[in-house]
Image 1 (tube, helix red, strand yellow):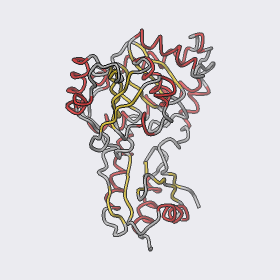
Image 2: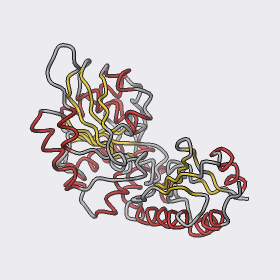
Image 3: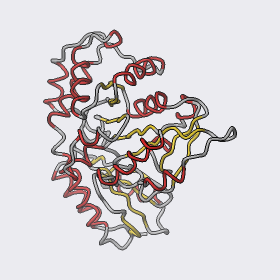
Length: 342
C-alpha cells in the first residue's frame, strides 16, 4: 500500500527536471562568493522582489534568525503574533542568537494589525526592552495558511517606518499566497526591510531559503550565516534546484490550494469533526470530536495509507503539495468520507 504523505509540504522529492538542473549546475566555492549558480539565484531573487541583494541559506529558520540578528541588538525586543513560526518553532533562537525579548500579540488566525502593533510598542525606560522589530508571517502556518493582503500590510509598514521599527516578512509560503491574491513580489518588497522565502516547501526544492534585503544588511547577513555554520561550498547543486522551482513550480501552487479546499469541503460534512479552520492556501487544520484521541486517529489514517500530523490537543493538520496526484486525492477523499468510529 502506498503512503500519501500529507504531514507537510516539505516532504516533496525533486522532479526529473529539477534533478537534471542540479546535475548540470555550474558550481564553485560559495564561501568565497565564487559559485555561479548561487550568485545567479541570489541576484534573480533580489530582482524578483525589487530589492538590492539576497542570501541563500539552508533553511527558513536560519534566514529568519539572521534577519532578527541584523535588525536588533541585545536587550531589544521583536513584536509578533503568538502563533508565529519565529516564536513557536525556532527553538527560542531569538533569545539564543540575538539576546532579545519577544512581545507577543494575540492576533486573528496568526494575523496582527497596525493598531495592535502600535499598542504593543514599549515606551523608553531603563527597565524595559526596546521595541525594534516586527515580524509578520505570510501565510501563517498555525493560522491554517491564513494570509495578509497588500492592503492589510501597508498600514503595518507605514506604522513601522513612522515609529522607526524594522519590519521582517517570514514568507516561507509566500508564493502560495500570491497565486491566490494575484499580487506582485515587487509590491511586497516595497513594504519590508527584509524578506525570507522558502523554496523547500510547496515549491519542492530539497533544501534552501533566501533572505532578501538591502546590500548592507545582506553583507552583514553573510557574516552571521558563517558563524551559524551556514557557509557552504558547492552549494550551486542546491541553488540550481531552487532556481528550477521558481521557474517551474510557482503557478501550480494554485492546484495545491484548491486540493486543500476540497479536503476541507469533505471534512465539513463529517460528524466526527468539530471544526474545520477556514482554508486559504494549502494547509488544512481541523478539530476532532473531544472523545477521539488524536494519536489513535492518526494511526487509523496511517493504516489507510495517509500520513498526517497532530497540531494541538484535538487538532490535525494536512498539507497538500506537488507530490499529491489527483489519484491520491481521490483516495484521501474516500478515506475521510468513510468516517471514523469511536
